[in-house]
Length: 138
Image (cartoon, rainbow, N blue to C red; front, side):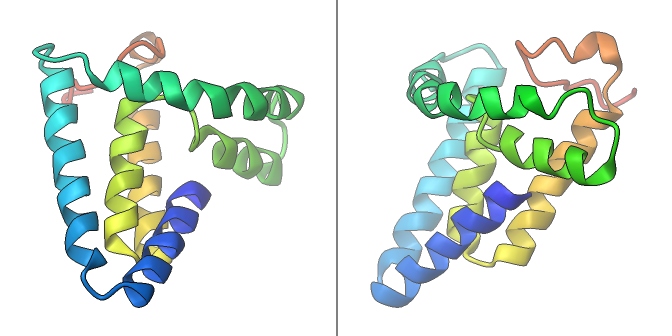
C-alpha cells in the first residue's frame, strides 16, 4: 500500500509539472495491464525482463524484510507488507504503473491493499511465489 501511495505521489507531481504527462501515464498503465494479461495467459514472457530490473532493488530491500520475520505484531506486519510492494513481480509492477497513472495516493494505496487482500484469499498451496493466484472460487 505504501509503494502504491508513493508511486501515485510521484505521478501527481509529474502531472502538475507537465500538463500532457497524465495521458502518457495512462497509456503506460494500460500497456502494463495488457502485458500482464499476455503474461498470465502464457503468451508472452517479456515481463520477466522488467522483473529482472526489479531484482536489483529487491536485493537491497529483502534483507530488511527478513529481519521483520516472524511477524508477531501489527506494525511489524505493516512494515513487512510495505517492503513486499517492491518485490520483483509483474503483477505488482502493473499495479504500480496504474498507481502512477491514478496520481492519487489514497486511491493507489487502496488498490494495492485490494491486491494484497486478494493474495490473502488464495489457498496457501497457491501462494508459491511463482505465479499469481487466479482461482476466483477459493
